Length: 366
Image (cartoon, rainbow, N blue to C red; front, side, top):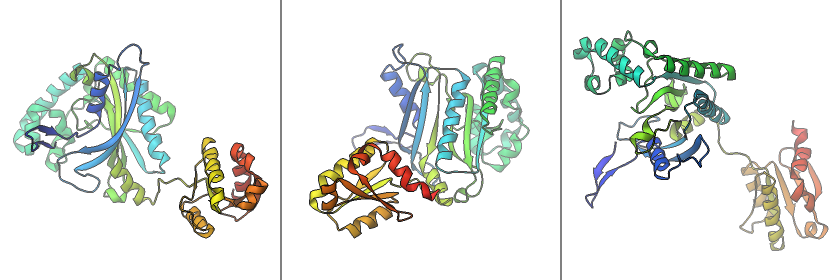
């Protein structure tokens, strides 16, 4: 982490991830109280900082979008969080995604498995990488996640946590996989997945992409899991939680790799001719937006040609032209920007029936 003293000799640590901060806010604002419906669902987005070697898709300053849900230990919530993450990535147009999951079980599972792992790894202690030698006494599960080829050969035959699950932990994970099957969400169980943060337990997951921009290998874009116990560690009552974090920079690399664009086309652009149309243009834009559509207009008093050029650049589906004649007749000229088809429509209808008008003028594109 970035951990240092500033010029005022204040001890500063930059946040490396979003979950702990959200949990702290959850505790400080007493959102665990009975007046709040469970689960308490939250989201965040913003910059994070990790002091590590920069590489493609891994920056020292990066941005993260995340969700956290508190107060429910039901495995169905685990599946809801994973399904939301999958749906979110698919909504961006991403394909070739892989959902990998594992369970770290409950505390009894972790205790038994930790001892089994230490017993297995100790004879190989001299052959482990320097990082893994240190982890052997602090957190041996992290050795399973080592990128060192020598470590990977050693852990290939290590005991698997799935063989040490308590009955409760086994039932929790079985319910998760059953529900994923019911929803038709494909997944792979990776028994060596441990995640990089030590507060996880029960379900953990990663959603990966093999985009060329990330080296063509399966690389994590979104990851998360359950962290029952973290709320207590940060001063709150016993409260289960689960969430995920999504790396924005990695997402943008994949979108660029697949030539995808997050920008939505504009539904309507109002072309106003003359200063006298300004008030009506503004009212029309607001009315269209109020009906659930995107709309915009010119604010620079430009000539119609420049406004039509902007409408085209913004991908507007239709333009609505207002001039002195249209104000007098209370009729506007609506133009399909793909086909060039034009119709005259009463201004009153545009303000209340834009759904039907847009469907009618664009139906010939289908």
